[in-house]
Image (cartoon, rainbow, N blue to C red; front, side, top):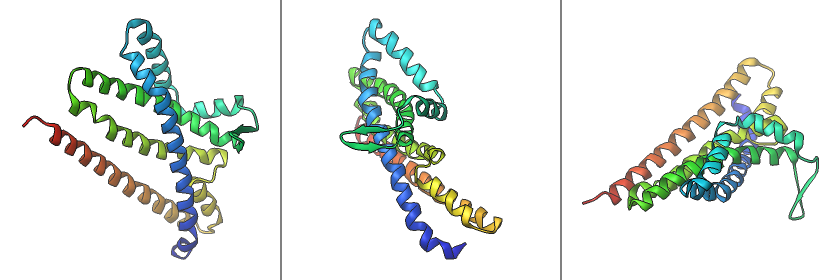
Length: 205
């Protein structure tokens, strides 16, 4: 197991970059659609009612199911700005964006109401919450392995297939789980520290 790490790690990290790219694209779409929805939720009933129904639908939609639904309705070949885009990759981005839109609409509404009430401390928590959303999207992007996108989990599964012993496969999966677990705990600790610092700085003297 140890002897494969020098060759596995660069490919794994390259796959992780793909996860980050998927998460970033999904978050950008989430912001573009979620923020207007947050404003609509905070407006009059005429806008808030349909916006709330849409956000509720997006919030409840299983991301994996949305991905396969999109795979069946998207054309086989897609060009965006002159670039060929894999249908599977686009389906993953859009499916994750559905979650991002609902998350940002919900948190954006909280921030908007806090601003209107003059509660700046609560409003600015939207930013660390956005970081949390990005990390959750990075983890969720691993479902791209199901459509053959060479992200971190796909790379791990391909490497595991090449290992002859079950014990080596288990060790590889354990290594990847520990890696993600360590990163997750570190990121969430940083987010919580940033939230605490913001609240402390903006707390009344």
